[in-house]
Image 1 (tube, rainbow, N blue to C red):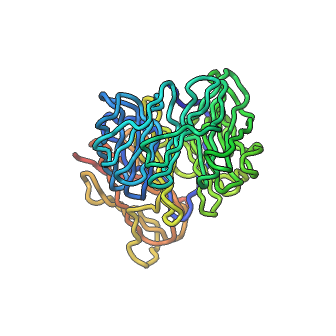
Image 2 (tube, helix red, strand yellow):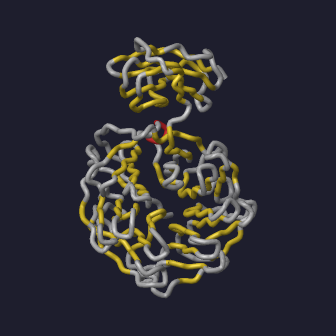
Image 3 (spheres, rainbow, N blue to C red):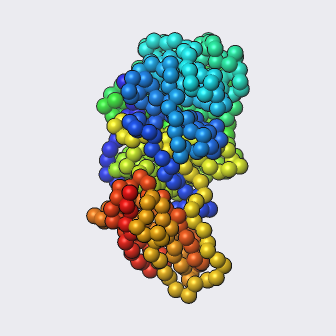
Length: 452
């Protein structure tokens, strides 16, 4: 079964920065058996679809109507196969691909699924509906020397036609979520060179649409025993974008993918795999990159890698893998990340303004103070109040009775004032916990008891 090629290595942890009180926050795990997420499709900040590895007799597709807080399983009619690649045109019309390349469609919000593309020996890397009728499918070649399965529908996904100019593959295939577009004419796709210890792989492109001319650039990279995978692709406009590889190679282009040049990785990243990239098309020039090494990390750049900012990740995301990142739109600034790795727990994180924090009043306190949480004991929510006489970078963390960090509640710059943080500990077990604040050299720790 085809999976992303991953490196597990040790490297130094770099500092992170928070921008405009937005940060990544853990939302939820998927219901048991918590299958790892392979792809996500975000309709808006409330309606989200995810597809996962198979478990319990069928492929698993979940839907949330409240931003990932709760999930419902919608897999009636799907085979017992892993699901890869999902696109929700609306709450009811959704397409999901399978490990063998087949494509399924629902028109009733996942209550029933019907196969609309029957392939053998392929693999779904992505699907996208631009309109209710027009969309494309990106699948693996069925064998070496065969064309990539780049298919187009003009009738709402009921039929999918292989485009005549689809590139012919050598010892390679596509990679899940490794594609991007700016419009229906400009599309880019990464690939995996499966030759062991290979030092390059192709990045495919078209600027004339799916039925137009396809070209490729051979991009140098670092190969391992499974080959060299350029498995992350992100563009911010028709000319500028970045790609990343399983060997930790980061490349950029300013000519639409005709040529690529090396990018210096973030400080401290010396051996790692790039898992996914996301490029915003809102003139902010923002590209985000998820990596895996000693832990999962997300970095962002607004200048094609000249500078990088590491974004804070909650602890549960650091021990997993951010498999796929999607943002709602430029107006909200809100994004989501699907957590998934073989053997790991599937879950969702959200990039949004920090919630549950309120400034109690406009009075500037005279001293630093960390108050006892209330109520205490609690089940499952409690409030933590603290005071800042001066502005500073506030770090508020929760630890278990063994001193192991279980959650970071705050890690950001805050102005002087008195604040209350609402904390939901529903995912923790009963017991004694500690919370600790650090700001401007001041630290304090207090106990709290969770009783379920």
